[in-house]
Each structure stands twice: as C-alpha cells, then as structure tokens.
Amino acid sequence: MLGENGTGKTTFIRMLAGLLKPDLVEGSDVEIPEFNVSYEPQKISPKFQSTVRMFLHQKIRDLYMHPQFMSDVMRPLLIEQPMDQEVVNLSGGELQRVALTLCLGKPADIYLIDEPTAYLDSEQRIVSSKVIKRFILWRKRFIRAKKVKKELTLVFCYIIF
Image (tube, rainbow, N blue to C red; front, side):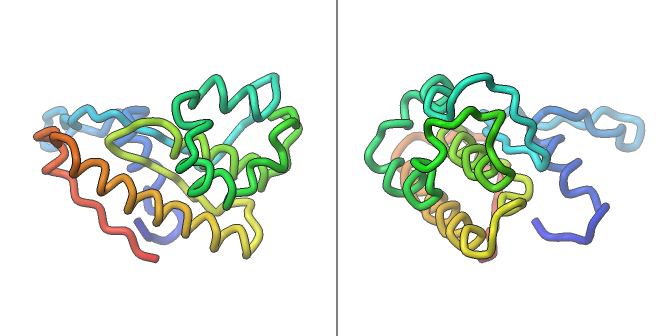
C-alpha cells in the first residue's frame, strides 16, 4: 500500500490487525472478518529481556530452525550476527531485521508489515524486499496446497516491487 504521509496507511493496517475498531459507516458498525494475522508495527519497542536466539526460539519455535526458513529469511537478513545479543540492546536496523524475521515466522493467513525497511541501510532495504517477495511466493504455493478459507477469497493483495 502506497500513500503520502498522514493518509492513514498505518491506521488501516492496525484495523486489519484487529488493534483498532473502524468508525461507524452510515450509523452502522463495520465488520472486519477475523483472520489469523502476523503484524509487524511501524514502531518497534524492544521489551524482551533475553537474547535474540531465546526470543526467536520462544516466539517462532516451529520455523526458527527450519532449513528453508533459515536459508530464505534468516540468512539474507543476517540474523546470525545479533543472535547472542540482548534484544533490548539491538540497533534500529538489527531490531527491524529481527522483527521482520519474527513476523514472517508466525503462521498466518495475512502478513501485515508496516514500513518493513525503516532503519535499514540501502543494501538491507533491497535484501529485505527480496526476502518478503520470496516469502510471499512460497506462501502462495503453500496456501494453494491446502483448503483456503472462504473469507480469504474476498481478500486480494497486490504487491509492487
């Protein structure tokens, strides 16, 4: 989703994530279908009081050590570098890469990533965009391989790279 500053992109993403309730439309509540959502917010505040390794192990245990996830997500995002550092001591770029890894590591119907390249240098912006694109292509194949929920047929997502 693209738009000028202040046009409501983050607000819309937060509504889709179920964190904000939309306003009334013509006096009626707006119903947003419930989905299993993985959400990476625009502003990330590190609160976990342990290492990146423990954080990922606790939060995404299923994919954390999966060879495909490691090669497609963790290696390109250079997650091995800060693995033994405390989450609260990470730089903005390191924290962004860990947050993106966490978001992509959660099983979800919809992935909402707000400003995924914030705090990253130019090279890592390109790498993270490629990681997201590759992940989406992998997920698309995965979703086709299982029965898709009826509600998902109502959602269309176009991603521009």
